[in-house]
Each structure stands twice: as C-alpha cells, then as structure tokens.
Image 1 (cartoon, rainbow, N blue to C red):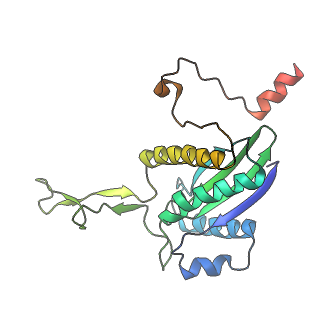
Image 2 (cartoon, helix red, strand yellow):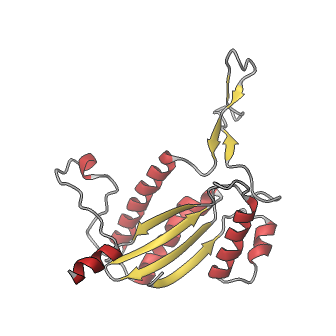
Image 3 (cartoon, rainbow, N blue to C red):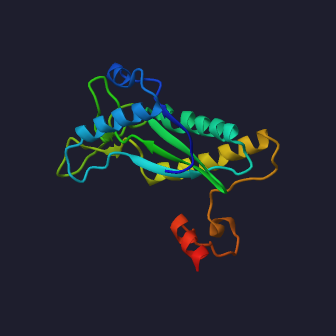
Length: 205
C-alpha cells in the first residue's frame, strides 16, 4: 500500500526458540512473511482465521517519530505482554496517518502453535468446571486465548488513553475519546467514512 513509512515485527517476552530461529537475520518484512506462512501452513481448515487485523488512526498532531513511539508503547502494553506477536505497518498518508496491526490467535509453545481455545482458570487457581446432570464431574469452561469482543473494547479504551498520554507529553491540550457520540451524551449524527476510491470519484464529478 502507498505511504508505507515504517514497519515492525514485535515478539512477546517469552518467545520460543523455533520462532526466533525462523525469523533470525530477517528484516521486519522478511520476518512477517516467514511467520504468517508458518501460520497458514499450520491451519488445516479451509475457513480458518489466521490473524486478527486492526486499523488504528494516529494523531495528526504528532510527528512520525512520536507516533512510532506511541504505537510501540501500545504494542508492548497490550499485545506482546499477552504473549502475542504484533506485526504492524505505519502508513503516513496525508490527513490520515494510520497503522495496520496484525496479531496472533494462538499461543506460542515450545512445540509450535497452541490451541485457540484454552481452559478458564478460576480464582482458586484450578480449571473452572460447570457441574450438570450430563457432566457430574464438571464440564471444563473454555475461552478464546486471543480474547473476544470484551478484549477489543478494552483495546479501544487503552488506545484512546495512551494517545491522550502522548498528546499531553508533547504539549497538546486535546483529548481522544473512544466512546460513541451517544455514550458521550453528544447529540450528533456520526458522519460516513469515505474511502479513497469514493473521494477520487467525487473529485472527477
């Protein structure tokens, strides 16, 4: 895509040896290609989801270097700290600086990729089970390792909060709010986001 200004392939603190060997000596693009090829080779289902992808808008007020610092902080706080790989690319498009961020859906184990669903651990430190007539010994409760909609909402809030920290750090007295107009009590209709193609058509008419 146009406007590529920077890219990084970030590993979690506990990265197994096989993954470090796989990407050793490669730049961000090479590491990205090798890793996602390995993910695709592992997934056997024809409808398998390989990754979670997010597009995050960057503050226009910050410089390229400041925005890179912002993204690195978010990735470290919210992605790699959870054991996920973070593969991101910064597109410095005029009026719309943003990143494309891809994260993993499976845990990284010493043997390879782990299961997408993992047991829920109760407050007692044991696997949570639900006892029923069909399962007198208790049926194990599972969750998605990479998180669900609640996780996405937490990331949205964390992204807004971190932007505010960095804006204030660089002397800007403005704030980002991740909530909708309705949740903020603002009586405005959200505008439609026009894609690049639509804007080009509009200019020709």
